[in-house]
Structures are given as structure tokens and as C-alpha cells.
Length: 579
Image 1 (cartoon, rainbow, N blue to C red):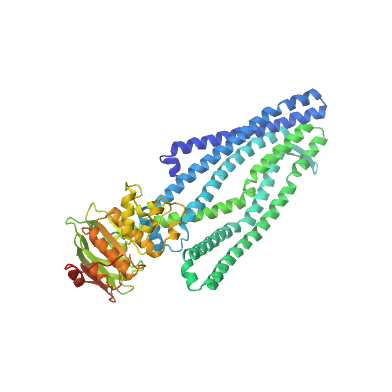
Image 2 (tube, rainbow, N blue to C red):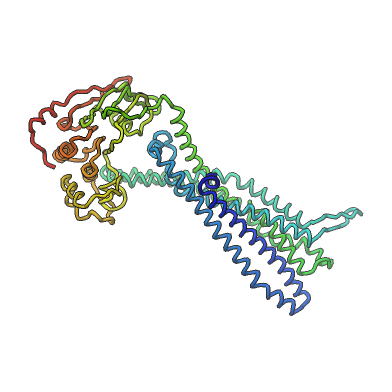
């Protein structure tokens, strides 16, 4: 309800009132057409040319008013849908992205497949039909009452003899329309109720199939190299078979619903004529009154079986709404879990001495298994520290904790205030856009001249791309190799000059000579920056002042620190390795 209560409330209520005003005008136009029908057919029955021409003269006025009213409904409804979707999408996307929820969601809710699809598509499918349903329900209710009053006034009551007793049924046409609509709606409800669950299941299967295809695309090279085509084809086919099965269940159920709706479609124009015929034959109603009653009956019946006409759409809307609601619940649970964990979380703070302090830090998986236990270390400003250890000892988890992405555990991490921190993952992110924007990411708006950027590119081994700095045609996230991505990351460091650099296997895709050249460049250009680096390749110690080793223990890995002797040797003039 934030759309109607927050900063957008004036726009929301203004559009809502406009939609309702045009809807009321549209109903008024329908009443006008209904009255015109009686006027026209009564003139035909009297064979009065003047009255017929007079009725025809009203046609442009009625049609013009009807068209303007209906066009107003369409335009204002679409504006309301667009603005509501805009608010909800911005709200959910901002909530999902803020505080790294998009990252942590993968750890706590792996079953929440494709949250980006839920935000991009299911939000639309839950908002747009809801506006149409609300407007349709209001319009149907007002239309039913309005035209029921016309039936009551024009058709009047009917009387007949039953066993010598005269039976009078007041406003019988209105009662007949309501009774007929109730029967059809009840039949539609019981035949269509299973459709909700089946559409929800179909949407889930569609999402899984899309996720499978995305996974295949993102891992295309690895799959191609190990010749995994047959297994992937089988997996894709299995996933799509599940989609087909889900669709076939919907087809069967919609066939049953179609039987009910088509039966209604056949009876729809016949019933009012049969019911009003006796009064016309008895001379109680004119031909114009018969046509007016028939049209009013159809209007009432159409309004009252609105549920029948929209049941399939309602089922699809509800399925999308559930998917959006599930995402909201997970995000709320994520926030509530953060609050409820309280003291059980890692405390992040600021240090007062310029150093990074890790105090009694214990890291655990969400299932409670301890990865690192009781770790304490101080990393001085400008110090270069290498973190090593066997696979699975928690090196990358420690990096995530330093980045504030891993809340599960206890202890405290404090970082000097006002420091610029750069995190360099094993596979650096390359955004859409020009190569220059990729090199400046995530500070694409900073003022840096091309000469500075090109110099940094050349020093990091990317000089051959300097002429393509403003090229936005190439898909750089797909064009650059793993090694080039890592060179891009080092180029960013030279340009942005952060005071704290945290690297996770940042040179794993480079050959040893290139690695040594870039790390030497880092020591020269960013000598005052603090560097925390995770790696296991031989030769890394040479470029660090201290090595911290994570030793596996049954109760969680422990930290042991030692000064790098290779670093001491380098102080006496060991030669540089080339990039």
C-alpha cells in the first residue's frame, strides 16, 4: 500500500479517481445506448420515419461520448498500471540490491530461483491484471445494479396461475439474471479452482527451464571443453518435458472451463428473449421495450458472471502474485534473521589506529558448521598480507566477512574510517558499456583523462586495447578472457588508488611472469595501500610482508602468522619480473 500512502500518494489517488470517473462515464454511455435502443425500435414498430431519423440523429452524440469515455478508461488505467508497477519494481529492486541481499539470498533461499525474473516479469503480471480486475469488479457491480433497476422498471413483474392461485413474481427479469449468473459462476468456480495451483506449478517449471538455459550459457566454455553436450542436452530436454507436462495439465483444466463458458455463450442471447416473449405477445411490452429489456438483461448477466469471464486470468494473476509474495517474504525473513541473530552476528566497526583488526572472529556456514574459529590478527596500514591454506579452510569466506557479505559467525572486524576499499575477486565484474566505463567501474563518473587510463592499461598489459577505449559495441563481459579481466582489475587499482585492497585469487588466470609483474607494479604504485590477498600459487609470498596460514582443525581452522622471508630478500634489490 506504499504506493497510495507514501510520496507517490497524490499521483496514485489522482489516477485512481480519474479511472473511476471515466468508468462512471462509460457506464452512463451504456445506459444511453440502452435507452436509444428502445427509442429506435419503438419508432420502427410505429413505422414513423420522423422518429427513426430523430433517433439516428442521436447516434453521433452517443457514439462520441461512449468512445471518449472508453478511451479515457483505457489511458488512465494504463497510466495507473505503469506508475504502480514503476513504484513496486523500484521498491523491490532497491530492497533486493541494498545491503548485498542479492548475494546473501543465494545462501539462505536457494529455492528462490530467478529473483530478477520475479521483479521484472511477475511484478508486471501481478500489478497490471490487478488494476484491470479491480476496475472490472467495480464496473461490473455498478453495471449490474444500474441495469437491474432498468429491468425492474421496464419489465415489471410477471404473474401466472398455479393450481388456481395467482402467483406474482416482482422484477422477475432481474431475479432471473441473478439466478442464471449464480449458477454459471458456481459451475466455473468448481471447474476452475484447480487451475490456480496448476498455473503456479507451470510458472515454476518455466522458471527452472530458463535457469537451466542461463546456466548452460554462462558455463558454455567449460561444458564445451569437457564435451558435456550430451548430458546438457538431456538435462535441458528433461526440464522442458516438465514444462510440457505442466502445460498439459492446464490444457485439460481449461478444456473443462471452456465447456462451461461455451455453454453459457450459447444460452446467453436466448434466455432473455424467451423470458420476455410472453409479455410482448400479451401486448404488455412494445418492441422497443423488449429490445431494451433484452440488452439490460445481457448487461446484468455479463456483469454478474464477470468472475466466470476472468477466471483464467485471475488464476494466472494469483500465481504471479504468489511468486512476488514469496520473494517479499524471503527478503523480510532475511532482514528479520539479521535482527534476530543479534549478538550472534559478526560485528563490523571502525578502528582508531589506522589498522585492520580481526578480534576473536569465528565464521560458520548457515547450518552452524564452524569454518574458522577464534581468529585474531592486526593488519597495519600499508602492510601486504597473504592468506593461504588448504582448500575448504575458509579463505574466501574470510574475504566475504571482511567485505561485510558474510554475517554468520561471531567476533569483530574493525577497519579505519574514511578509507577507500577495493575488492578484487577471481573473476572481476565487467559492466555493460564502453571499455572506459569498465575500467573506471564502479566509479564511472569520476574525472579521469584518457591519457591516464591508457598509461595504466599499458602498464598492466592492456595497451593493445587502448584504441578501443570508447568502443561500446563489443560485449566486453564476453569478449575479455579470464586473464584480461584480471588485468582490467589491476588497471582499476592503478587508476583509483584505493587505500585498502582485498584480493581473492586475483591472479589465478595469469601466467607466473605476468602475475609477478602486476604484483610488483602494485608494490611500486600503491606502496602505501594495505593489501590482503588470498592465494596458493608459489611465488606469491615474495610480494607480501607477512603470510597468514589457515590450518584445518576439527572445530574450525586456526590462523598462524609469519613474516615473509622472501619479502625481506626483496628489500635488498631483487630484480623485477616483467609483465
